[in-house]
Length: 319
Image (cartoon, rainbow, N blue to C red; front, top):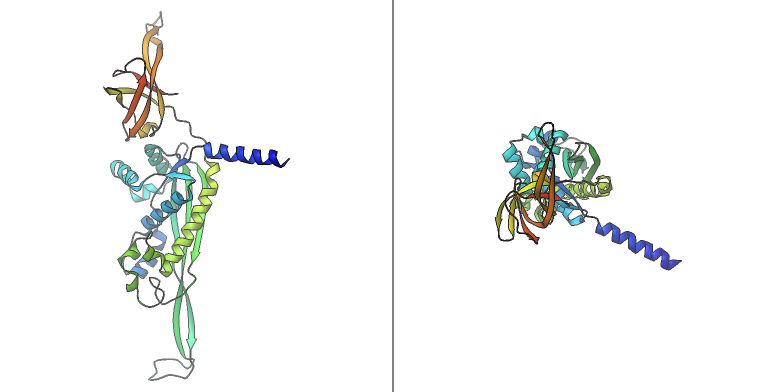
């Protein structure tokens, strides 16, 4: 009985491991709600939305549930498509960005709390000196850092919300400065502005951010099963041939990914409607296959194998 149970467990684990990871992209988080709090902490506006997105990418990569698209690929698409910041938080626009990137889902989110949880402590009670303090004693105001983030996982096919996540974090220490353990923020250094750095993680606000994003990443990983299998049918043409290296006229926008194996087919004849003369069917032979090694948005490079040499104009299709 035990051997049957163990075999079933092993088979289930093998099946899970055999399933390809879903590809996701993370857009910068919206932080309009907390912009004034951010300025109060740093003395100027800082793009904490970018910082939270970078940290979430890092934690998702560490979790190993998803394959995550690099930021430079996202920035390139945003620049080319000229999407505004407000466009990026719209599910329909986010889905369009995701389709261009060739991902299964795209994650958009907001920072809803980012700042202090003040508490005042009364020290002494010896009265006032020069009328500087009240009769109740001296008050010292300290704070804990509190951060809250939310996110939605959007289907790139339908713009449907597939999963939602929430994260809240609070520093375990308190101090007079959120950029330090108490006292001045100078000890944090310039690295405090990089939310993935150890310097920032050591600050009060950094501790709260890491906890909030960590909780959020766990909830998003739990929603991986909600992502439907995305079947992409690739249809393109060979645009260039050099030995067994071919260049296709389709890329990531058409769903092509590195590692894809595509059939190479050649048209042998056309069947026409005798009444109208229009082509009603094209008959093709499969002459080989191409394995994709490089991809950009509008083209792909692959290695061809087959008994018949490929030529420009041959069709490439999903197997």
